[in-house]
Image (cartoon, rainbow, N blue to C red; front, top):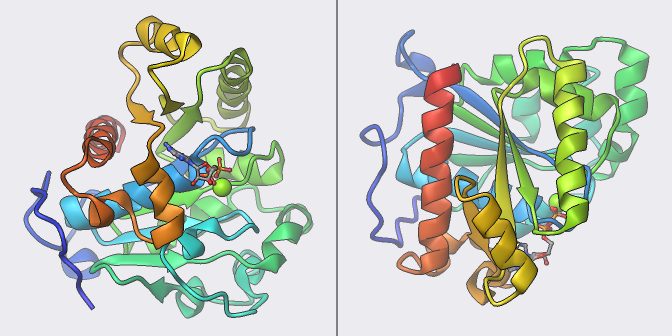
Length: 271
Ligand SMILES: Nc1ncnc2c1ncn2[C@@H]1O[C@H](COP(=O)(O)OP(=O)(O)O)[C@@H](O)[C@H]1O
Ligand SMILES: [Mg+2]
């Protein structure tokens, strides 16, 4: 099932991490891709970063889809199974391992969303465990080196739990004044809900340098990683494969690699 259809170099580590059996020095990390806004590129970024993690860094990686829209499974060509169990992972009625599915890429698995995720806020509130998601990601870390959370655009019990579970929060920001506001909201959300404050990495998402506002946003935030607005990234949803598999030599693939490197650097500082 391994598909190594690209020629990109691995960034760190050599080959697949041995995960559960590799001993105590293994680096693990949970990366949340989050914004209070929809349509900003969260799912696209989460899916592509998970690919970078598995294929380039050789990490055993879990992409966990927390949005009922189910974009992650779609982007990897997984058929929806009609199951309504994704939410019951939180009530501990279903072990996550039972729902995890392999992708076509070696070391990259997905915990897909389904309709039951819509009720997740109510489920979490009823359970009353503020760190349920953090506990689950911590348990899954014995099998996975990296867990990428694709989050819904909500400010709720779920987002609070995401902040407690994440080691790093990626916030995609298409250049616009509204996005800047969205970032402020996330910063507050992180500070309000997590004692140890996971760092936030803003990413200029869907950047189109032909547009004046976008150019200005780039100039004002030169340190922020960039994901450009390109047809090859748009193709992910058409071909149901990540950019690294569609066009490994493309500038878009390079942008995701640079973003992934920035994430690995940050993670090495906080985990
Ligand atoms: N960098 C990009 N370039 C081109 N199209 C993009 C890019 N990022 C996202 N898209 C497209 O924009 C739409 C919304 O992206 P998505 O990742 O689903 O956002 P979100 O998860 O924040 O709602 C999708 O159709 C996706 O294919
Ligand atoms: Mg999404």
